[in-house]
Each structure stands twice: as structure tokens, then as C-alpha cells.
Length: 176
Image (cartoon, rainbow, N blue to C red; front, side, top):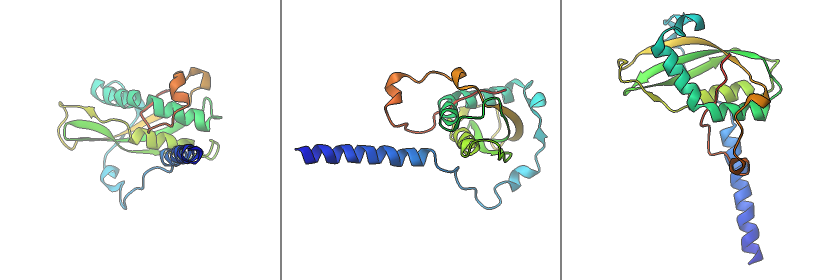
């Protein structure tokens, strides 16, 4: 009986470690020429797109869905409070929903290793938002300044989630 219990504990710990590595691994691979379809689109500055309720709503909705994941990124990699990460959000509408197809970030050697890739991966994995008013194939290139929040401003993690492996990025936000 002891061997069974030990085997189960080892299996659960092994699964938790493997899941953590998968969740916090590098961002998804980019196919060759991934940026070409977006290159011809204008890069819309944050001050310009933020006044458009439709674009602002899509970005806010995606960040809302990514709140937990982004908070996880900051907790795990931390040390960059107040740093601004310039993001390029490549938004696409497919099948009546809009989502961040790709999120590109300027390289930053001064930030903790893994923070920027965690942020971009989390945003790319956010839940697509229904946008029935947008025609199929609508694409935007939006610039956004992501302000890394202080740890004390992050949403509190419920006690029962602190001890369980994280199933995957579910979101997070703090837009500066």
C-alpha cells in the first residue's frame, strides 16, 4: 500500500512539474513569414485606437480574460515593477470572434528573463471575443504600452489556487 501511495505522489508531482514547464515554456513557434500579412497594415498608436470603442473594447476584453495569466507572469518573473514593455498587438477577426493572433514585443535585456515571452504567450492564448459587427478577416496592428505592475497591486490568488498546478494561462491585465 505504501508503494502505491508513493507512486501516486511521485506521479502527481511529476505531472505538476511537467505542466508548469509547458505553461511557462517559450511562446508558440512562429511560422515562416508570419509577419508578412501584417506588414502592409498601419501600426495604429495607442492614443489613436483607444478612442475607438470597438478597438478599445476588443483590447480591454482580451486583457480582462488574460488577467490571471499576466498576474502569474509578473509573480513568477517579477523584479520589473514600473517597466514599460512596448507591445504590437496583431488582432484578427475569424468566425465572428476577434483575438490576438500574435503579440510581438520589443526585446528588453533589462527585464527578468522570461517575463516578456510569458506576457506575449499569455495574451496570444486569451479567449477570443465575439465581435459579430466586424467583417470576417478584419485585421489591426495596434501599439500598446504594457506597464508592469507592482506585486502588491496584483489580484489576490485564492488560497485554494495557490496549492494547485495552474491549468493554463487564463488572463491578466495592467495597462499603463
